[in-house]
Image 1 (cartoon, rainbow, N blue to C red):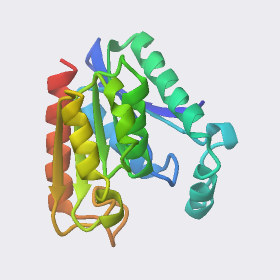
Image 2: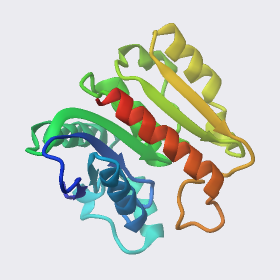
Image 3: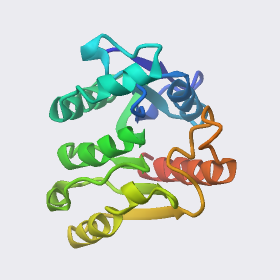
Length: 212
């Protein structure tokens, strides 16, 4: 596995965050998210989850096709390996959270099910997992959704109910009038600055509280 690592320059030990990319792979937008987290005081690792297939290509459409070839369980295991790397990293406090976008948001939901060491999970418009599996979730979750994203949002009620029944601490925010991928500032047709800024503020506050 390869990836992009950013860390605060003047902090000896910082909480860590795995950044999970969209279905376009590890690109400039995701690397920028990692740097933003570093400026907020986190060690941030954005793994290239297309590494087993040769890494993220320049062609975004090709990357999307390659994402469809990944084995989901193996991909979650690769994220757990990224967590393990951060727990042992010399500049890390060993407290690790994760944030993901789009396809990566769905991976956050799956990671929370399989990784008891995860201290906080943030999913941006991530496809919801099988509600029957969420009983193993230990980490608090922050879930952001786009109001116009009907396909993904259809899963919210059952996911919310399952998390409540399992006693999982979670917060759900739906940003009305915005599209899926509203946080991606490299997508002019989807980006919404107001919603993106608010969701990011909530994300940073959540991660700081849970990884302190």
